[in-house]
Image 1 (cartoon, rainbow, N blue to C red):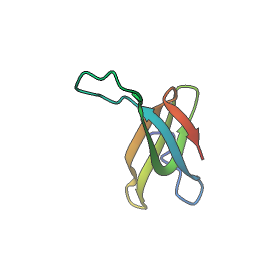
Image 2 (cartoon, one colour):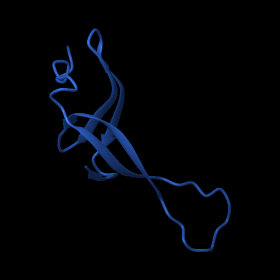
Image 3 (tube, rainbow, N blue to C red):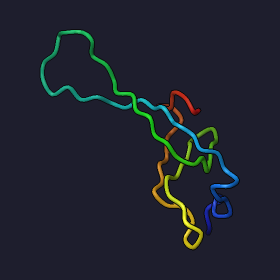
Image 4 (cartoon, rainbow, N blue to C red):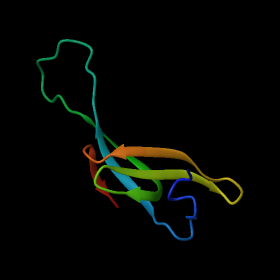
Amino acid sequence: MRAPWSRLTPDNVRTVVIEWADITNIPNWNDQEPVKYAVFRTLGWLLESNDDRIVIASTWNPEDGWSEFNVFPKSPVRSVA
């Protein structure tokens, strides 16, 4: 089964920046503040966004279509711009 975005091209999807939070591991005893999680930004073409996930791709060519996917569960996503 082909992906629902197989007919999409960079001409008919928008480019987005996903800001998302991730776990930070502090491998020692730490009673000092601040202890924070990491925040990242990832750039790509928006292929899918629903209640469960956001899918972006960073590479496209006319012969093979999309590659280099990032699939984000919605819960750690802070913004889509």
